[in-house]
Amino acid sequence: MKHHFLISALVALSTSAFTLAGEKPNILIIYGDDIGYGDFSCYGATGVQTPNIDALAKNGIRFRSAYATAATCTPSRYSLLTGEYAFRNEEAHILPGNAPLIINPERPTVATFLRDNGYSTALVGKWHLGLGSVSEPLDWNGLISPGPKEVGFDYSFNMAATADRVPSVYIENGHIVGLDPADPVKVNYAEKVGDEPTGISHPQLLKVQADEQHSGTIVNGVSRIGWMTGGHAARFKDEDMADTYLNKAIEFISGTKEQPFFLYYAPNENHVPRVIHPRFQGSTNMGPRGDALAAFDWCVGRLVQELKAQDKFDNTLIILSSDNGPVLFDGYWDGAVELNGDHRPAGPWNGGKYSRWEGGTRVPFIVSWPKMAKPGVSDALVSHVDIFASIAGLIGKPLPDKSGADGENLIKALTGESAIGREFIVQQALAQIAIRKGDWKYVPPGSVTQRGGIDQWIETQVDAPGLLFNLGEDPEETTNLAADYPEIVADMQGIIEKVAPE
Ligand code: NG6
Ligand code: CA
Image 1 (cartoon, rainbow, N blue to C red):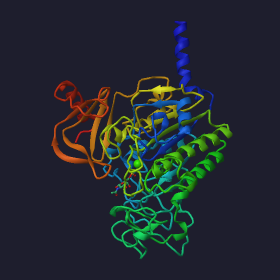
Image 2 (image 1 turned 45 degrees about the vertical axis):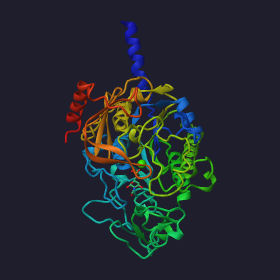
Image 3 (image 1 turned 120 degrees about the vertical axis):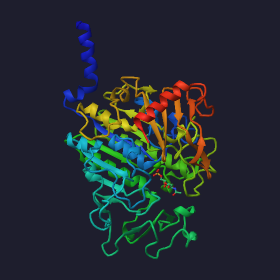
Image 4 (image 1 turned 30 degrees about the horizontal axis):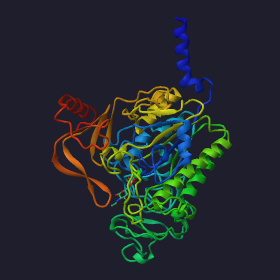
């Protein structure tokens, strides 16, 4: 009896000791962009070495069954912050750079939750969840709101959407950085504004050639999706972006003294355009894509070094992952396809960004928390949708009303205390879903993912039958076992009807 009491007291201590001691951990989410399961050396990468990330993994926990909720950015980031599957919000698809905010400010997010629980909160990097409201057209030259602040970030330094979409400027606490009021910014996605060169009219000005979609206004020698005019003094230089975000992240960490911090650090790497600082050029033999991964790793190393120097590393929970799987060609002819060599960006999995094959959503996922987490490798099934509920569990507070109910509190799995994750997950690619449960993966009847274009994956609407794969034996999803296991198909269909009815 006594013995049992002791054991349960110890177990209870292990995840809530910091609350007893009054020392909440800092929380740092490092969210890479389009980084595949196989893109770090600790996950088997051959074309690029990532020593800083490998060190985090070695002293932390490396997950092998972790998922972004979707195979593209906006829906994954939506789920990460809200704890809700993105298919529940029909606005959560790849957004243009002038889209309104898609998170209702009344909806709790992991950022509002932590802010309300005594954390200093910040977003640094990519946003891509919309800015401004649906009812009023956004004036880029005034206060850009609602945005990160309204969904819980005390401090924000971000781009509006992606580096390949206008407006190509940084926004700090709702204001374009370095804006000259005499040169106001205008943005349009329907038609050209201003009379500046575009990728179509002036291809000779480009550093990297682009497809038609990416042939709008040229900023810094790179043509973008959409058109902008004005804001010349404020326009970013892609080469400096990694350093700019890193320095803002470090400033924020250094400035937080009394409170614990929550930093959502979302670098551009290795999203297109991959126009990297010269000091990283040639770090790998894979051209700009490999060099972008090397730059990402270097930034992770610098952050860790800084946390250590400030004596904050041991009690910082770091979660490092990616918003979706890898892509080589994504609009710019930057050599990623030609120089890829034997490297397998999605590791052993099939497909990549945009796709429902495993490579679309199964992503690298590393947790470091020297004070509490047990180092190791974990096969627990975890999803980014669980991060909010897990952090709530960690803080020892219930999820606020109206939070996304799709996430589960997996803090024990995340800290290596338990090998057990969730029972199943829903994987989303564009408008389609699939289910993973145990070793099984189920793709409901209707459409199939096919290779389209140079390296992209598209959902083709065909009258395809349901597909069932055993990922343990068939990681590349080649052999459809649906006819052999009708009871598993029925179970999977039941999950879909319950969790994601039409
Ligand atoms: C796609 C773009 C792609 C990339 C992606 C968003 C085209 C043809 N392709 O629509 O280049 O910008 O959107 O990537 O326009 S994500 O990682 O932010 O989801
Ligand atoms: Ca992405």
